[in-house]
Length: 69
Image (cartoon, rainbow, N blue to C red; front, side, top):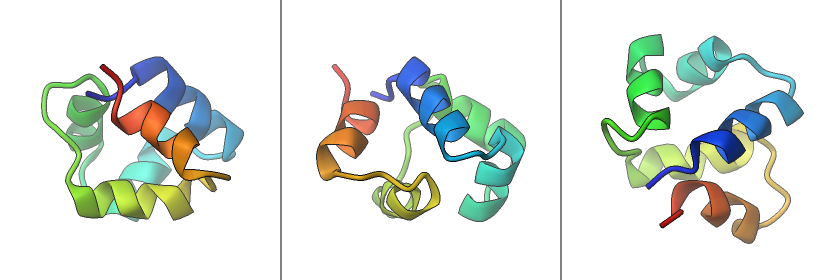
């Protein structure tokens, strides 16, 4: 389950918009919306790409967002 608040903060810290993140992932803006709001799940390949896109400093930071309970 995605931690929506932490994900949105990570986008802002990276200096990106949600539209830019969606484009970098190769998905639509609506597709990203659904993933952020836990309507659909991120694929493992998308989570791996997000490490680079959002410039995470550690795996823990990434896991806090994408593997929330």
